[in-house]
Structure formats: structure tokens, C-alpha cells
Length: 166
Image (cartoon, rainbow, N blue to C red; front, side, top):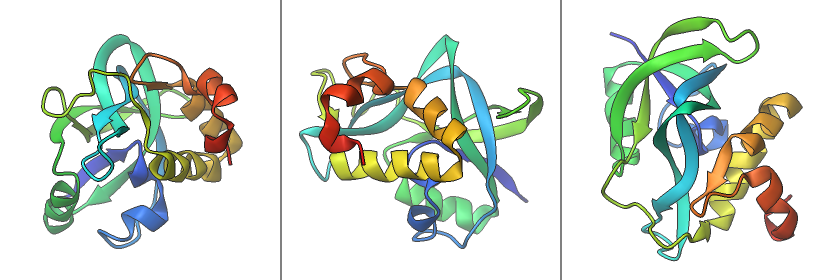
């Protein structure tokens, strides 16, 4: 059986993903009804956040969809242990056409940042560079659909945090 997975943070980086499973073909997609937020406490650097999703009817974000088998899904679940899997619809990034059901990873309660910390810098740079590697349009959409824990959109937040802009 095959599973459609959507990566929206480090999983959009081939280099990062390939540390867990073999190389995959990516399909750029949109996911509706969720907001991408740096609001998950990073247990490796506890004073910073990594990406997560929050439910938000009016929001959408871009990511990449790829297929995995059961063995690869188990390896991804082990890697993304902070998150739960949730099923939703994927839409084509360019046309907005509904494609298929997919799985996303989300933590709704366990390690949510309540203080509004800043993103983990190396993780942030990895995710953002991977988004721009897909295309300039994809990267700009990533900036416009990603938020800090304190609610600031990355495209404006990064102007005052130039050390994150590589």
C-alpha cells in the first residue's frame, strides 16, 4: 500500500528527507484549513521552535507531496515522533485543483510554545532554502504562509531578523 505524505518543513528538503527514506519525487501542493507556524518546542534546542500546523479554516500553506510504502511510513513516524498523522486533501500548487487525500503531521497539544519563542535558526534556514530551491514562487509562498509563534508572517518577520535570511 502507498501513502501520500505532505512535507511542509524539513521534509521539503531532499537532503533532510533522504536521511530517513530513499529519494522521492515531489509534487508541489497546497493544503487548506491549516496554518504553518513555528510553535512546536524543539527538544534539541529548547529555547527555539520548529514548524507545526494549527487548524485554521481560512488558511492554507504550500508543501510537497510524495509517496511512501508502509516501511517508509514507519521510519517517518519514528523521525517525526512529536507529531500525529492527520488525513486531509492536497491541491495542486499551481492550479488549485484537488488532487487526492494525503497525510500531514501535526502536534495539537503536546509541545506547543506558549511564550512566542523564535524559530530554530539552522532548521529555519534548511526549510526556507528548500522551499526556494523548488522555485522562487514556491519560496515566496512559503514566506507568506508561514508564521512565528507570536503570529508574525515570515515575509515581514525576516526583515528584522536578517541573520535568518540567507
